[in-house]
Image 1 (cartoon, helix red, strand yellow):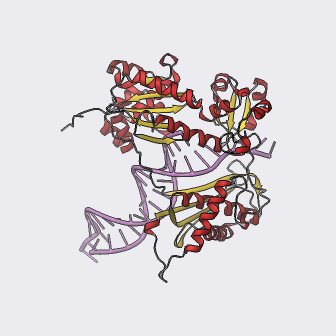
Image 2 (tube, chains in turn cyan, green, red; image 1 turned 45 degrees about the vertical axis):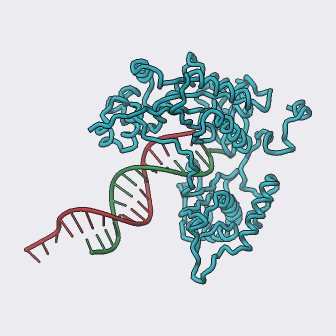
Image 3 (cartoon, chains in turn cyan, blue, brown; image 1 turned 180 degrees about the vertical axis):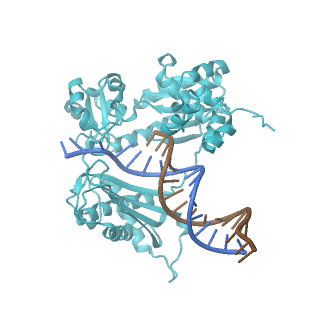
Amino acid sequence: MQSIPTKQKIFALADVNSMYASCEQIFNPKLRDKPVVVLSNNDGCVIAQSKEAKALLEIYMCRPWFELKEEAAKLGVIALSSNYELYADMSNRFVQVLSQFTPRIEVYSIDESFLEMTGINKDLTVYGQEIKNTVKQWIGLPICVGFGHSKTLAKLANHIAKKQVNFNGVCDLSSMTENEVDTLMEKLSVSKVWGVGRKMEEKLNRLGINNVLRLKRADPKRIRDEFNVVLERTVKELNGDSHLEIEETFLEAKQIMSSRSFGKRIDALNELEEAVSYHASNACERLRQQNLFANAITVFIQNSPFDKAPYHGPIYTFGLPSPTNNTMQIAKAAIWAVRKIFKAGIYFQKAGVMLSELVPQAGQQMDIFGYNSDNEKSQLLMKTMDEINKKFPNNRFKLASEGTKKTWVMNRDLKSPNYTTDWKDLPTTINHSRL
DNA sequence: TCTGGGGTCCTAGGACCC
DNA sequence: TCTGGGGTCCTAGGACCC
């Protein structure tokens, strides 16, 4: 028996255009209307391009910067290291503005949010323009908005709004006729669908499903047999049958990871200990922000897959004696683990710490002596540490084991100032003359 | 010299139990 | 002379997302 939807839902997806590049352009007028690229940590790869940079060369994305540098310089492309403090702050402001338009928002990533629009009796194309213009006016970010009867359709609508200029940044699939929607879908490759990556695209194409319309019309049962339940759900969502809800509630993390590649290769144990100690401290800070405690820790170190030497990536996971979020305890455990997996003569490129089996404060277990190993004194110390670090982010209060030399720290040579989160970087008339 | 970091969900297969 | 079947839990690995 087929269930008939009593009332179709409506979702919107609001997404910032070239988020990182746009943030940089807002605060530095010299970057406006210029080709700008933002680089990953260590200035490794291109992870964002302004629309001007995209126009020059689409394939910059995800390619290593050292290969592109020269050519980019000739084309007048300006490169910047990523400034996550700035992007995170702008992202919060973006969500603030969106909350003016609907009470139900799901912050999906740093640059996109789903909005529940069911029951909002307005011309959504007009409403979308209003959202777009308000965000632009209040915080300066350019966005696109897509509407549809499922999250998957809202995502697709957003893609259309972004790529097809005649939509002027807003696409509402929910008010179109089935024929109009199908015509749009027929022109899009399946890889544009949320949840279809490279592997699935290849397999779908082999089965003759080479555009979105064909995926929409595919038999869900067959898709489930050939692929999995997730893609089956996607097919239903493409048909306007909503299976994914807005997730407003803050989901508790299941694991917290801190890892990063080094600015240079490292073969000394003491430097690896410093890096691992830093990551333990960083992960613990995020653990405490969510009032969680970890039961298990994983430490890994690895050389680069791009180096000539064979891949070596030892990884060690073990349970902690009792759930903790104490930086000193976890850093000690991490150092112990890295000593265990360290091998001399390997030039390591990356290290990381992952905390898992996370439990909320209430679920904290007592150890066999009947009291928490995280006694009140150490809790107070952690709290003080977090408060100091919040006030002085550039002068962190940290463990001695993190070291002071930081030879392993990543390169961010081209980073812009922290315009919105650091008083001394606040844009002023004086700073503007410098820009 | 230089090739991101942080996640989630699902599945298959092994171990173990009755 | 027999070698079933179903359930659960765990782990590793694949695929995907931004």
